[in-house]
Image (cartoon, rainbow, N blue to C red; front, side, top):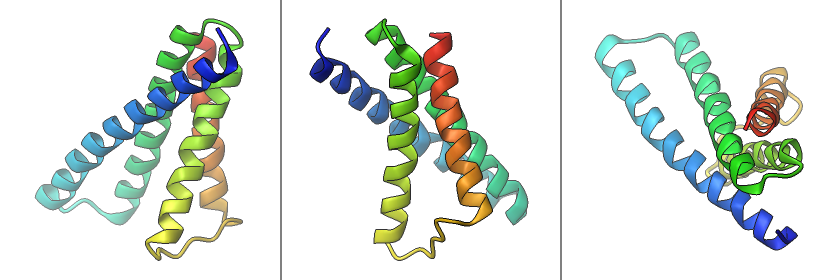
Amino acid sequence: MSIGRKFAVVIKGLIFSYAVTGVLLAILAFLVFKFQLGESVTDIAIVVIYVAVTFLGAFITGKNVKEQKFLWGFLLGLLYILIISVLAMIIGQTFHVVSTANLTTAALCIGGGLLGGMLS
């Protein structure tokens, strides 16, 4: 399989990941509204969603790529968090690249991608 086709598989994995993210964040928003969940619980749930969807997206990508799966999983996790970060900056959300929370979330997303790729 050519690199272009592998990259296309990563893009499909990203699309899947973002679709699942949208559904899970909508469910989380409903739960926050219904049960008045606190900010700390919501923040943790968001990070768990990010890690879970990067794992799933990388797992699916690895199944389709079939070689160097960890590398393509890493790429998926990296692109996932980069796109979210860029979108956060575009919509004007305060975003500090060097904050501990953002670096931890980025590392967890990339790690989720790596693990998903390796286990596929």
